[in-house]
Image (cartoon, rainbow, N blue to C red; front, side, top):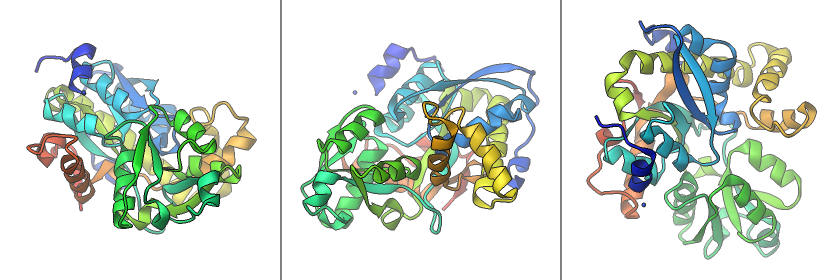
Length: 339
């Protein structure tokens, strides 16, 4: 397959047991790869695997490259600047898959009943004017990074379930959305709890609902790579999934099951703080990191029903081709497909 240039890619945009089940790759040591990430607690599987040497064990010399939104990461994967990414399904990602540029190879984070998840937020101005529950979203303005982003999908599904419609405002970056919400330039947004709860604590924003009430098994983020890697770099790709899955297993055991007690949580917070809320002292970052605890997908398992629902929504909004199938987007030879 011809490697896409960045210019071309931009044009195309317009389980511990489960981990052990993944075969050990027979590849040369220190294979250099670049891993795309966001500075979110939900990306902790990557940070743990990097810090604890799980990628090294798989023969991979990993460099972390950070992004501020999902779609630029997809562009970087397609162009070959980045080898693997952890991010939400977006219209851009699906379109790149349709062009034979990228493949989803696993799941990273899902909404799960009983586990605190993504929150629906209202600005203080909108809240004081009556936006106290998702039922009042009709006619309001909802923040998103870009059209076809996960924020666009979540907001649309929530307001449709409530029988209304909203205006969506693209603001490109998460930081810009936060600023617009706090200042009342937009009325509502949805985001992971480690961001939502501190915002609500400031008084400028209010939590008015949970995404899990509307999308109880939503596959929030996925693991993906270039189609070339998926097809031609089998050992490297399986090695990456093995290392990443060990990081995920450590996170869930420590932060969800709390197998190591408070001491284990403290140690994990120290590790994650190297990458998340780095502009805050540890004592101020820790509550937000802990508040952001959501179960990550053991063994990079992928919720197929959720992916199918997302694909169908993007198609219904004419954001991607109606001819795209699940097989176009997902390489099932890697993904542990669960419904």
